Image (cartoon, rainbow, N blue to C red):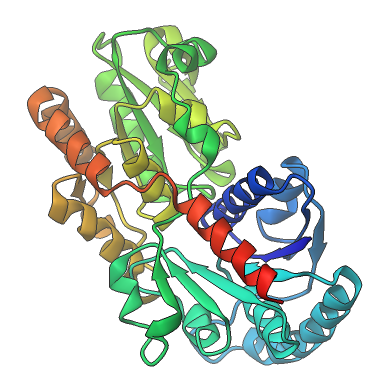
Length: 373
């Protein structure tokens, strides 16, 4: 059996594919996989790092305004469809799974036209334009939020609410081993600060205040993932103030990126992050309370919609990006750390929203589709 995945750009589109692939392998270890993405997306490093084959096509996302790039993309899209046709002919997949990003468009569309069983996994409460269009052509749409199902008007019969896939190793939580790995102390509240796979400038700037004001405090440890683009600047500022970025014994570790995110989450008591769907799926699967700062330029404002769903259940506090300051973030975090009862309530609320077996459900759907062929 052969399974082709299409998705990329950010970790939020790649990690679900890797999780589903792992679940499929658990069902049938003999399955052959191929991933299709672009050479400039995060998939170019993550997919080979995970041991899978990757084919790339030349394509960029369309901008929501008139631009020369959009004109150029029309020609790239036509060329990408021809490239996808060659990939499909060569690999001969039994099922094609899309997990988000503009690369899904030509891959899933061409596969559906060729009569190959197709499945789209939509992570957000408000679906993206590409997946809404693909909903007309694919066989199954697996959605992470029940709210998303209503958006696929006229195609509800093929829409299933599965929750969002999370990595299997994420669920094998060993807090003590994780803290030992990073050099953090046991019994101290550990806060993860992350802007997602590509980082977040506003969160990084606010987090500098956290490092300053929590420095020397024995009741908190900060693991701060800056993203590659902001790491040097954060490092420069903290180092100039005598705050070593790699000093876990003093409760501080700043890194540009981390492949071992399951280890980081295993020891996390509270997270400060953007509100990408997969990041939230991981937090809720582990029952981690959070302070969320939604990315303000996400399509259809879907990150704020995602974040408000957690806030409504009492699992998170939401700060709009335009209102975020270091002092405000410190105030919210400090208040939470002083109220362990509220943190326990938030943790229970997050766990109540979590879906730990979504990857297995989507994998079973894909295997069922392939068997029909």
